[in-house]
Structures are given as structure tokens and as C-alpha cells.
Image (cartoon, rainbow, N blue to C red; front, side, top):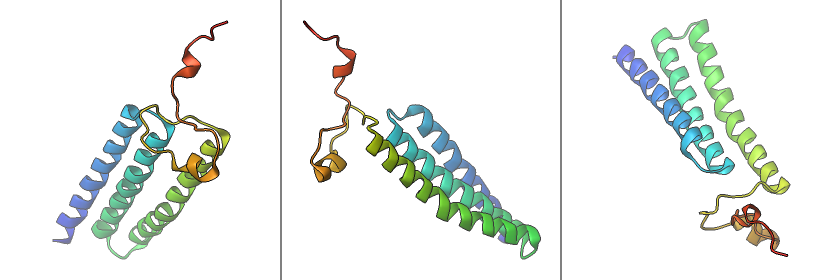
Length: 124
């Protein structure tokens, strides 16, 4: 039974990782892509590592897999948050279909939603 659950966890983890890769290709802007990569890769990697732990048991490989899963679970979301916050502060534009820009409303500044105005030549 443990073997079946281990393999199922690995398969689900690989599925999440593949969905994250698909999100990197399909989503329109940096922030959506980071969300897809962060959530899917975190869940995928933790699922794979947990499956390895279940298959190998309480030996050196299993404990290392659990330690790696905990490390990924803690560091990847924090790193993605820092990168996203830095991109917002630096002024990377949001997708033009963005519904709400809470960051701009909170700081009371100019909207960073890409309206496509930069693509149009200026009239003189």
C-alpha cells in the first residue's frame, strides 16, 4: 500500500510540475507566470520528494528527500514573493487584462497596468 501511495504521489507531483511548465508558456505577464511556477513547482517537487520518502522509507535517501521537500516548501514561495515585489517596485507592467491593481491603490501612485499606450507612436 505504501508503494502505491508513493508512486501516486510522484505521479501527482510530476503532473503539477508539467502544469507549471504549461503556465510559464501560456500566461501573459511576469506575475501570472511566477504564480504558476511557484505554486505548481512547489507542490510538484514536494509531491515527488514525499513519494521518494514513501518508497525508500526511513533511511538516508528518505530523510534527505523530506529535508529537500521542507526546504523547497519554505524557500520557493519566499523567493517568488521577493521577486514579485521587486518587479512591482521596479515598475514591470501588469497585463492589460488585469482587473484590479491593489498595489497601486495602496501606494496611491500611477497605475502599472499595461494599457498599450507605449506601443502607439506619439502624435505631434
